[in-house]
Length: 228
Image 1 (cartoon, rainbow, N blue to C red):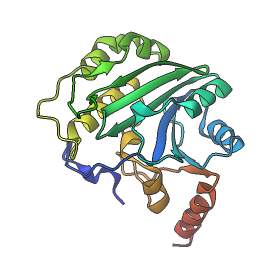
Image 2 (cartoon, one colour; image 1 turned 180 degrees about the horizontal axis):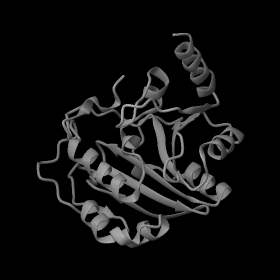
Image 3 (tube, rainbow, N blue to C red; image 1 turned 90 degrees about the vertical axis):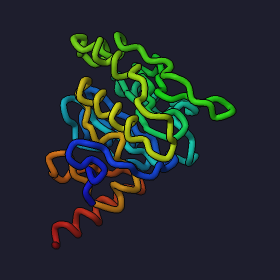
Image 4 (cartoon, rainbow, N blue to C red; image 1 turned 60 degrees about the vertical axis):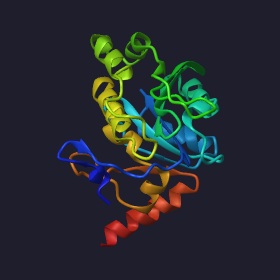
């Protein structure tokens, strides 16, 4: 499956919004093997991306499906950042809060951000939270603080529509370019990785590693690819 079928000619195309069924977060520093061993030791079911520019992506099977990132307390992310003594950035795009992230370091949640927070009556407000200076300091890119601030608080050019989140996906991609993490992070889900081959923006197949129940699925997919 072409991961970037939604991004033709550099412009994102509409796609249906799916509720979260897994955790997506980035580990900064430790490599793919270290992250996989840590998650495996915790008994998690997850896929882990290759490490790129010090970033390693994780898609962990969530037990409580449908919970938006802003409603999560981040126990797993806190634990991973504490065990590996590194920063962890949880990211996501959903119909509840638009693009969201939570920053963890050494077992502590530092701050959170939501681009389109909604209240109990589903009224959508402007972006809340975030700390551009802290975010850039933690990930060693203090030269782009102003650009990060602009991306986080850039107003939407169209009325909020929870069924198409193109602008929020673009916001995620812009932040990825500034901080250096892979653009595909918020486009990929656990099930997508499990069910099909996923390619990066250079159309190269991404070599995920699976732990827990994801591991035999990963081995079966790899074996099938080799036989073909």
